[in-house]
Each structure stands twice: as C-alpha cells, then as structure tokens.
Image 1 (cartoon, rainbow, N blue to C red):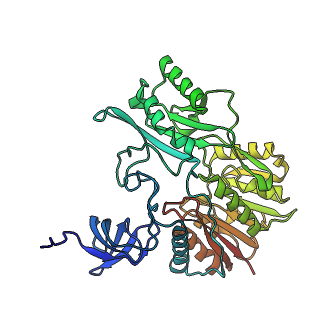
Image 2 (image 1 turned 60 degrees about the horizontal axis):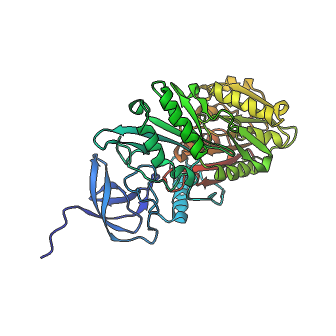
Image 3 (image 1 turned 90 degrees about the horizontal axis):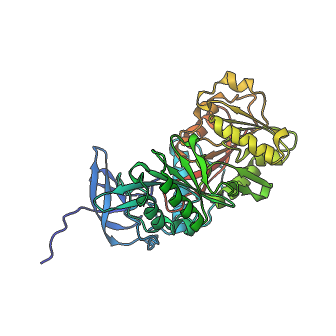
Length: 439
C-alpha cells in the first residue's frame, strides 16, 4: 500500500526575480526554492504569511526542460548561488522577463526595442567576493566561505565554481592558515579582489597579528603568489601587508585604452568580462561627442567617466564617497584624462531641481545608482532643459522601473531601448540598462 504524501504538491507557473518557482495553491502565492516553470513539485513551507508562502522543493515529480545538473557540489547548501539548476540561457531569458514585467507593472512603460542580453562566462567569473571566516569549536576547524542559505552558518566549502579556479583552490589552504593564527577567533572575514596583475586577499583583523602570525601570512602569500592586505577597522583602514612590491591592483577597459587603479575594499564590478561589454554598450547608446558636456552620476571610481572622456567629451562625475572620488581623480590623471574630467562629492539621494540647475547644462547623462535607484535625480531633471539622452544602468529592475515612470510620464522622455546584463550568473541578481531620449 502506497504511503500518502505528507507535503503539498504544486505546479510551477514561472520564476520570480530571485529565481524561485512561483505557484498558486488554494488562492495563495507560493514561492518555492529549487523549483522551475512547468514542474510538478512536492514542497515544504518554511515561512507562511496571510498572502504568500516561502517553501523549499523536496521532490521533483515532473522535471522542466530548463533543469540542468548543478556543477557545484555545495549548491543547495551554500547561499552564494540560487540558479545553478537552471540552464544558462534560461537564466538570461528569465531575467529579461523580470525586467519587462517590472517596466510594465511598476513603471507603466514599455521599451520600443529590447536589447539583446549581455552575457559571458558562467563559471569562475567572480573577481570580487567577501568570504566569512569562523572558527567552529565543535568541528575543531575554521570555515571560510559564503553563508548557508537562509542561515548565519558558514557553508563547509572545499571549492567554489563561481570563483576563479586559483582562488577556489585556496579555500582549504586558507582554512588551515586561519586555523593556525593566534587570532583565529578574531578574524571574521576574507575579502577577495582579483586584478589584472595581482590577486589580493584582505584579512579583517580585529586584533593585531603576532610575529608568528605574520610569518605564517608571509609564507602563505609567497607560496600561493597572492598579496595580503590587513583591515583593522572599516574598509578605509585596509593597507598592504605582504609583499609590498606587488603590482598595483587594476582592471582594464581595452576598448577605451583605460586602466583603472583601485583598492581591494573599494567597489568595482564583480565580473570584469561582463563589465567591459557593459561599458561598451552603455557608451554606444550614450554616443557622447567631442566637445559635449556629459554628467556621470553615481560615478564611483570612474568606470564610465574615463571612457566617456576618452571619446572627447567633457565629463562631470558625481559620487557620494570621497574615497571613490579620490580614486577617480587618480585614474583620470594616470590615463591622461584629467583635463576633460571633473569630479564632485555629493549625496545624490538629496538632489533637488535647484542643485541640478546649478550644475549647468548637460548634453547627455549617464546614471548608475545602487539598488535604491535615482528617484531624486530623475525628479530634479528639467523637463525643458534636461539632457537630450540618458542612459541608466541599474542593479535593481524595480527601482529602474519606478524611475522610468518619472522620466517618461513626468519629464517627457521616450524609453527607446532596455535589456538585461547577466553580471551574476547562477544568481537571481538582475543588472539592466535603459536608453531614454527627449524627442
């Protein structure tokens, strides 16, 4: 006699923006981890609210054509990836649908043209990462890696398929190194920055290293050809430890003959391969001309500012972080672009029409905000005297859609084109780009 199932069953209708399967059961929306469209799954709920539930698939009763075998042995436990079970092309298609849905539903706008998705290497792409480190007395070892799904525990990782292989191969040696340090219980984090000519590991040290610790760290760096930095407090306190004669940390944009210097704790895109294509497309859409004046808002260390200047335009880059603005100025000087660039430190979340008008006229504008978007910037753009063309690079399709609503329905722009950028394969993160034109 067949034992009755203890868990409910659902048929998956779609994927949400985080890669969860979406089903409707008894009038309630259920978001199911590990489930794909067209699948029939058995699931177990771990969060129940009046209007929805979050659940985990416990059995796949009918598989989707999108399903593939995850490459990483830790997938499902480690929280670093959520979509390794989805075919790579299907991941991109799902993200494109998320963007279109947000533009239509939140922004009440529709792009005249859908841009072809930007995608590239799906493994070993992550050149920036922040790994947690924790001494686990019960296991008698140190763990170094990403957190487990929905947990404060660190996944017991021996490898990571989205990190460059050299760095993945260092996970176990790093565990041994930290285990042998006197401050193993006071060293909670290892930050990674893979540059053009050097691989940097930043140790977050809450107590000073002892002389014996220092010898261990130096020996590790020499053996594995990495450079260590130490960070005693906030990110701005990080400093190089060993070797001190290592090459400078940089990434390059060959299409624009630009080399960007940066520090390992400063923000850069995690995927340098995709970033090069992203910058190239953004500038083709923006199409700055020699002699024009362009604004680059949320400019960071000049990822778009310097290429725009290389094409002959004069650029004002504005960023809230003083440290990043200093790095942008350094980059402009190193690349011979100081005469065509100007940088200001300002909180763009407090932008007003008066402040925007005081910056002068811009022929074109590039906006690249964090997840919160650029609502105050969009509201401050003059409907009569604003830039003719705006390119908006987004890491959150919901806030892009919200801001697009203002640009189109209040400021009179047309949404000419939009498309996704798969900056983070195997995750639900949706990067996108939109082109707005005043016609």
